[in-house]
Amino acid sequence: MKHDALRSPLAKARGLGSGKHGFSHWWGQRLTAIALVPLSIWFMCNLLGKLVGATRFDIALWLESPFNALLTAALLLVLTIHARLGLQVVIEDYIHQKCMNIALIIFNTFLFVAVAALGLMAVFKLHFFGI
Amino acid sequence: MHRATGIALSAGAVLLVAWLWATAYSGEYFDMWQAFFSSTLGMVLLGGWSFAFFYHLGNGIRHLFWDAGKGFSIPNMTKSGIAVLLFAILATAYTWCSILCPEA
Image (cartoon, rainbow over all chains, first blue to last red; front, side, top):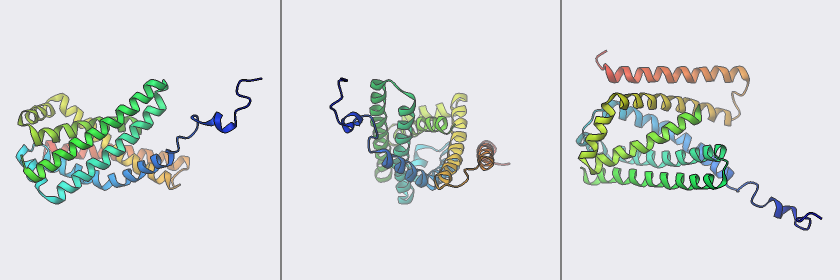
């Protein structure tokens, strides 16, 4: 008799199949993609048009506008979510060693939460307090 | 290619925030970043990122159309693939022309 003959099919399947987050991951990736189309074009236009070669003072002045500060904050938030979700799929697809896979997914999440927090902090600081 | 440009852009996002952070908190770091991005290596990286951005943007929109079930036939896929590549090359060229020689 095989050792798992008395186990239910459910018990065998547990831990092997969908993590149940597949849809929200997929949907989150698309939603952030749609939001990033206008946000990233707007930011690129400003970056290339005004912020290349700008001094710290110029950048602070640009972020003094509530419109610019708000959209930059939104961009950073959506961008880091999109990057984290996208990189997670790459890690899941190409890193097969279980331990490394989980470690990288955790690192990926921490990294982009930190990037979002630091970016938002910088934007708020420049907007409310200047340089 | 979509993934490769996505990875490059993620790295770019990390640097972008490092640059923003330097802008907010440290003149010294800010000068360091500006010097780096005006160096040859920095310019090549910026050029690569701008191409990666336009490619990922165009191809991302292509993916959104596929998600909506449109453009799945092989000839359509080939056509949209070439269109995205052309768009990325032209947009990158236009961007750098206008930065490097604003008079023209």
